[in-house]
Amino acid sequence: MTGWVLHVDLDQFIAAVEILRRPELRGQPVVIGGDGDPAKRGVVSTASYEAREHGVHSGLPMRTAARRLPDAVFLPVDREAYEAASEEVMTALRGLGHVVEVMGWDEAFLAVDTDDPESVAREIQARIRAATRLDCSVGIGENKLQAKLATGFGKPAGVFRLTFGTWFEVLGARPPDALWGIGAKTARKLAGLGIDTVAGLAAADPVALAAAFGPTIGPWLVQTGRGLDPSVVTDEPYRARGHGREETFQQNISDWAEVTDQVSRLARQVAADLTPEQRPAARIIVKVRYAPFITYTRGHGLAEPTLDPAQIEAGALAALDRFTDRGPVRLLGVRAEFEPE
Image (cartoon, rainbow, N blue to C red):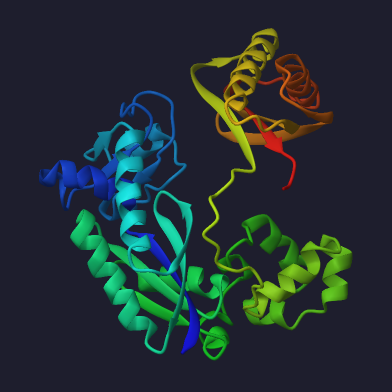
C-alpha cells in the first residue's frame, strides 16, 4: 500500500455550526463576528458561502460587511459551540484508526496507508456527517503541502488529489501566493525578481533566492514551488507558539498616554494567561491598527524567557516605543511568543 496524506477541512465551519442551530438560515447570507452587532467595530470571523459571493470574508470590518450586504444575518461569535463541534469532528476522525494531526477547529491532516485514498476520503466525509451533520472537503497528496492545497480544489464537500505528477498541470501557471505559506508581500518581492508563477519559482536558483530572502526562506521558497514538504503528520498535541490579547475600541484613541495605558493593561492580561501553562515569554509583539484600518506590528526580545508580569509589561512598552506614528488608534494587541521547543 502507498502512504498518503489527507487534509480534512470543514466547509464554512463556524457558519455551518450556526446554521445547524438555526436551520431557517440555510441558504441565507450569514456573517459571524464580534458580538454580532455590525454597527460596532470588529471584524468578521467567518461568513457563509452566500455572503462570500458578495465580498464578505474573514478579517473584513463588520461595518464594511454591513455596507456590502445590509440584508445579511449577523451573529455573535460563540466559541464554546465551535469548540464542542470541533471536538466531535476530531473524535470521529480518530475513530478511523489513522494518525490524526489537528490543525485547528476545522482542519486536520491524516496519514493513511491505502491504495485507494479517494475511498478513505469518502469514508471520512460520511463519518463526519453522521457524527455532526457537517460537510467537509478532503485533499489528497503525497505530502502535507499537496494535500492542503488539494482541499481548495475540492470545495465544497468534494475530494481532490494533487501529486508530483499533476503539480505543474494544476499550479504551474498560478502566482506564487497560491501556495501554502507564501503571502502577497513575498509574491510581490518575487515578482520584482521576475518570478510570477509557481513554475517560475520551482525553476529559480535557491542560491539567488537565499541572497534575496535569507538562507532559510530562500531555498524553502524553491522547495515549496516544486511541491516538496519534508514535514510529517504527527498526533502529538498541538502546542501554540504564543498567546495574545487584543481589543478593538469603539472610539479611536488619539491620546497616546491612553494607548500606553491600554498596552500595559493588555500585557498584564497576557502575563496572567501564561501562568496556568507555565510557558515563559521570550519575545513580546505589539500590534497597532490605526484609523481607518492600517496595521503594523513591532517586537521586543526579552533578556531571558520570563513569566514575570512586570517584565512582560516592560517588553510590551518597549515594543510600543518603536512606533513613530502617533496617529489615532482603533485596535491594540499584545502577544507573547514562546521559545521554540
